[in-house]
Length: 601
Ligand code: PEP
Ligand code: MG
Image 1 (cartoon, rainbow, N blue to C red):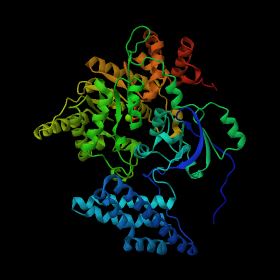
Image 2 (cartoon, rainbow, N blue to C red):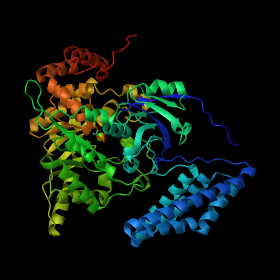
Image 3 (cartoon, rainbow, N blue to C red):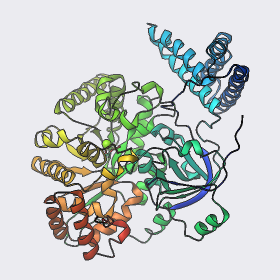
Image 4 (spheres, rainbow, N blue to C red):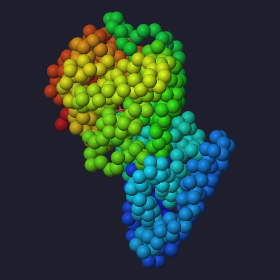
């Protein structure tokens, strides 16, 4: 039944999420979460072959577990390797395997479906169990299920065996998957879903890795080992490139992280940054992955303006405990120095849904669902250890706390109450705690509309323009089909930014802009014009934004911002920005950094 695979050159168009060009070999990576499992009906003569396929997947999973166990024994000692025994026992469980095979035979369905039916039944039984410890064991079942499903799909679990020229191809990369990939060996990334501000895009830009997202059905077309070219300048992906195509691309210069790193060597990144007319602007770092930690100082960031703590989750969605978090935050505070680190509480849910254990199940409308602060307030067992870890780490360095997706001041008050309760409890326990400033992310229109009142309840604002655009314009930031409606320069977005900045200034609190807008030279210029004095971005973006801001005059960009605020449409704003910035400072704003001219029809 095997069909011969198409090897002819195929061209795919997606959304360019970062710059650069790369050629390499596909490494398909399973996202691990949100896997769709279909009920595939089999012909009578296919059933026994399916049973054999299931048994082979069990054998493969077993081999993987044994190898993992050995590795864990070597690295951590026997007592830590027992966890794999539980998984091995489950895989070897006669009843489980007989049940799966019985479903395949009686319902004549594919193995994936049969595994899901049987393990769902098992999980339902565990849900009923009163004993906390036993109920917790359900995560073992989920883990083994996931392993089996991945073995059935023939994929690598984390893409651990990366070759030097690996191009990651995935349906979607979850923060927990990204956190486990070794980006040193990754040449490029291509995903089926995503837009300019999706996580894959943010991470790839931060690491200087070429990335194309929003490729729809590409994951199904590519196979591990296929040759591939990723042109992140145009959003084009070429699978099985013909020799002539290869030649055409190899004539071009590779770009990416090293190129931008080299360009910064001579600059004095330590000096305060001022516009030509003397207005000081502070640039901080957005940090997600450990590889970026050392870049905070290399690129001259003044502290860490945003640490997206959800990147601490492991691939299986397990949360780090209080001790692990405390160690991580202390390390970040050490790197950040006296400027400190702003730790955002886990922003889970929405497009950041993560693997099984924390998944609140399928939501109809996840971006409007149990995400970020809502999830944390609902799951105090998640929030409280994080707050404790931040309070403890703050005794050793400057650590602040950021509350994401605030839509109502009540959420701030509830979270602050948790902070105070945990502070008191830690003191009772005789532990040292430090001062922690609490800030609100401004990324939902309702927060903008009550910004003046909200500013009196927090110590600082953190403007998340990625979500502010998404929620103000009602446009899914991860959906390439509506990428054309994702307009960061929409007058409504600019009005919101202006109002939030004014409210912060009125209340005498700092405001930092940490969405992707801050990392783009033209947008950063508009933000400075709107009154932003602190911007936070991927460390690798700092040199370019620094050069831009140092070369412009605040008075002029303030005038430009006023004109933009008066516009009726995003098109009008883009046109003004393109003409004014490109005309006044052509060396600071080469055409590729400006909105493209609209073809008027
Ligand atoms: C934002 O929304 O702009 C932001 C900074 O946070 P995230 O991209 O993680 O949602
Ligand atoms: Mg956000």
